[in-house]
Length: 199
Image (tube, helix red, strand yellow):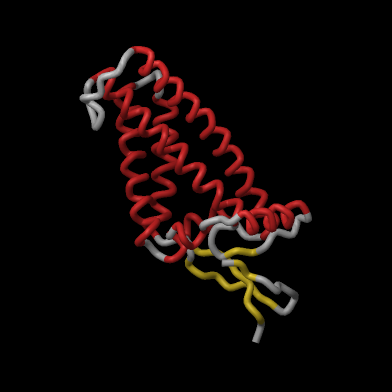
């Protein structure tokens, strides 16, 4: 939802946008990813535990994206080409539109991050099944070439995800400065400042 017509006769008002479960999902996912990233090549057991937590969190987010609170639902921030282009033009002019939930570019980033994480989780589970005979893909039986392909896909998706995380963090900082509200704090408290007309 975009807020338009912002002028000097408006004042800030804090409203709750991100519910507690969504905030917990966000920070647990970030923590689990950091553990999985650090433990890769160091502690396989910890790596698999963190990967399983990521998979479970993604399943929760998929469900919550259809039956959660308004701003948690995918339909509330589904990006369109026109909205993305308009927002990018606003960013180039350093005057982006104000949104209560995710802005259109942020929405694209959310879907890209979730998709990358899903591919990493699936390829990781496939490797667990192929190499150790555990997990959902324990009965998977493919050739060595396919296993190498899945390994490469797992690594390639991780590299893409790391790039996306960097862009995401830069976007959060830029948006916080341009919009003059702390998006990191908003993901901790659940509250964002919006502009409303003074009575």
